[in-house]
Image (spheres, rainbow, N blue to C red):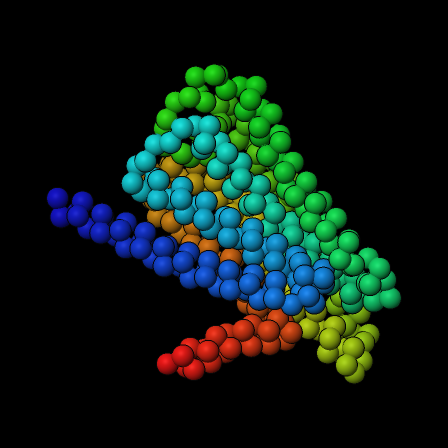
Length: 303
């Protein structure tokens, strides 16, 4: 009995920690999105548009994943049709974030290695086209998944209520293998793009001098941070398969592994976007500081 009480207390503490972290990240992201829409320069510049897209994508992932976490904790059952919609949206934006990070890396590559064509290739119009392309590329795994699911599911499945898990939509073993293959293909492709950009920028950085050298090395550090953030995001694509294997071999360890994966590979990457552009980027940091200090100043006047 004491062991059960201790286990319940640990789970409760973990849920509280997750709620605090998600609330904190959502507040920070919403603050940065507000600052983004305050100045014309930000929403007419490609890299800031992509930055805002990652913030919005992260907000969707944080909210939906937390809803599913709470449903699982309180053992709520929902209609499978609604669960399918939530799962598809979560799956889509799980891919949107790493794909956007890859495109942001390419933007830095063009800015540093092809500066004369940067204005032409990275215009506001091109950024909006890229946003559509990002969503199209990210939706391909969902299209494959839905095609297989609709061909396999019976009409009764859509009307029943049950716990909402991704595994509910996998009827055959080969579906899991196909999903794994698609995730690994995306992983490999994005890693190749990141490495290509890194080595090209490194080559330019070594040849640069003066102010250009300083700017180039700063861009290189940004690419490295994008690569690290991308690595964490891409590990998230493997979490489902790791958890499924652990559940079969070590059922008692499953909950601990799932909690670790959630904190490390779902929440952690979402705190790096504000760090990379919200704090490291001088223009955005100055706008953010002005916005926050202005709010504090108004409060002091009102008191």
